[in-house]
Amino acid sequence: MATETSLSVHVSRVIRASREDVFRAWTKPELIRKWSCPEDARVLDSQVDLTVGGRYRLAMRTSDGTEHTAFGVYREIDPPKRLVYTWDWEGDDHSVGETVVTVDFNELGDSTEVVIHHEPFPTVEARDGHAEGWTSCLLNLEKMFDAA
Image 1 (cartoon, rainbow, N blue to C red):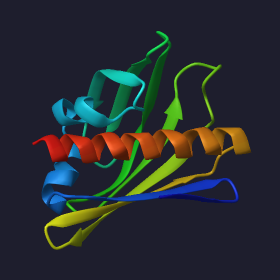
Image 2 (image 1 turned 60 degrees about the vertical axis):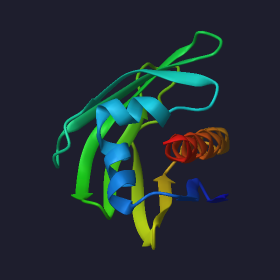
Image 3 (image 1 turned 30 degrees about the vertical axis):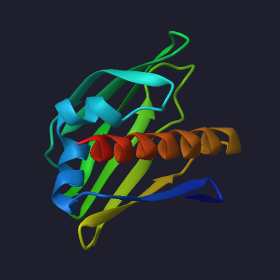
Image 4 (image 1 turned 90 degrees about the vertical axis):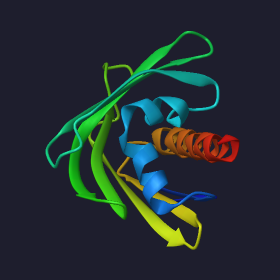
């Protein structure tokens, strides 16, 4: 489910896996590579320094061959409950300026509700594109755990 208010995005999905496993999928490079891109793309590289102030980098290629690289800095790490980090895209043609992603991992028995709040976006188009991207990423995450 995705809802937008103002120039922020709020996306959530229930994943059939423990909160610890979902948090690990969000923070381990080898697991991030399996799901953290839209459905029409694949992750080329994932780098994570999972410390407050540590950097991450996520490079992906879409089915038409276009490459996009997201990067940022971790601001809050509270395993397995929450991650907060900055987000932007490399390159002047993709950059939206520094935005902030907050991910909450809510325990629901043997499942986990992942709640993403991402803001602020400079335009409605940027907001809508990220809402679509996050929704697709969460679907990939769900499929990854369903296949396990």
